[in-house]
Length: 611
Image (cartoon, rainbow, N blue to C red):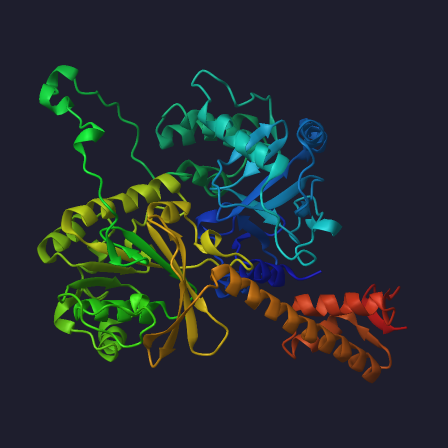
């Protein structure tokens, strides 16, 4: 079994959003709980260096939904029985990564690009953990001392990828919509109990909080009611610190923090002038063809997303595009097989905002190498005090576009230009952030290119690689996925969405000395490259597995056929073998009956021995 630190880092490497929980508890160890979650292995490692005993929390949403089967007979929760009843009527749950919880319940992990509500008891004793929620992950220790474990058939190390949410599991998750959206103000989803016992009090207080929130009460009013219920019925009551980290953060779920509720009065209909009630009929509207900024790839006066992992050449690409536009040249995307560029339109203005690269140190040089007309390119550097005012729908951006009327406006990366109160996983909030760009595009004739990073999930492509928000995909008219071909110095641009026609051919480009240049068109897509890289990695992993097996046998020979299991693991890790490969190598040698595990009766330690 891996250590808590090793497991947490492994989850982050798989693309999950990880954060620490208090040792042998389920409440967060960080100030903002699941909102602090990160999929950066370095950040995660730093938490567990601080305290190796932290339990592991996984923030749900971000492509992950968990069906939580509660088993607390002492509190009247019989989730396993409830699940059996559901499966008899709706079919069995699709096999997937499955966790045996410390209390005897089950967590079914599924991948999805659909956002669901976080719902307690979508059916009796079964919850949906999605956007704004979290689960405890193995090998965390339950407060009762029992570890969370992967079910033998559902260990992620034994499965190539998480199962998609479908069948009876999808049907169950979609009940969360009706469970949350059709609840009336007179309904009582909070079941009044004489006392809230440990293991059940969180769900009960969450249900009470959700019920009060549906009444449009102010957040502080809700908090006071929850505190009072906890104080009177908690057995034992949760501490104020636990409430702040485990219960109250969910008040901000799915929406940006809001002001206290204030009553508003709708305007009297008599104040609306009659001529304001006229709306056009379709016979008065002339159909128009879609306009293209770069034919087939970038629609004019619309939003295009360019998405890729770090180091794949995204900056070099947009610099090459900006350079061509500033000189009135066609870009390498539409060179029609010709590497040489030719002038075919007037010089146009480009405006960009980059929060990742220094303008003076990096970007000016890149644009000069791409032979840009710097007089036609403008920006605000991140060091400019006005930079913080630039948000996707901000008044300053509106005025800058009105004053300069750029043909192309670039944001890199998008995370720097959305309101800090908005979560990218919040569909409604992200749509509100993006919609002003649609208006600006039509009003000022500007085309928008938004750069963003992919998530770190493996073996996914297209829409599933876009980090956090499905709304980014929906509201953009074109999505360009950037990646590496596998050949050093060469990358690809695969169009994964085209709202105005057939998807364009994939462009292979060479990123030499920071300048992206066209090489050729091919028919392969992002999916083809992802799967090709996955197969290559699997082949390399297979060779690495064989090498690890050979090394284990060599080490055992050098130690007279017997080594402490922990010493053997550390020896292999010193040679950069991952915990995953070490575990697989041991399993393979046990299968071949070359080694076995024996426990020393006196010391109680595990030894690896040759047979």
